[in-house]
Image (cartoon, rainbow, N blue to C red; front, side, top):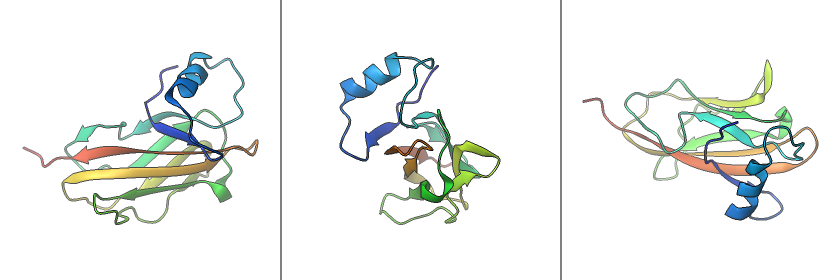
Length: 133
């Protein structure tokens, strides 16, 4: 299973890169007690030319909708998503937020989730919107 290099931290403390690498090396057949991101759209660190309709992160375990959030901020720290960041009703492994048209710039996606087993994880990543040429 290929995973995006989303910055991931356990709510109880910062996870070292070695710890995270060890967890990922265990592979998908290993039962993990946390929900970790599998992929994101836009992709982590990507440069895109048009505003996506939404930011979406797929996780490897079900999330508790009432305790899972996603937000998108511009370089100045101002929130730019439509305020609807939440677990998708039809897929409790999908966290998403709608976006309005965005100006060119770098945007930070921040997420905090509670897995159905009660473990919290959080992280962030950026993507850059460049003007169409």
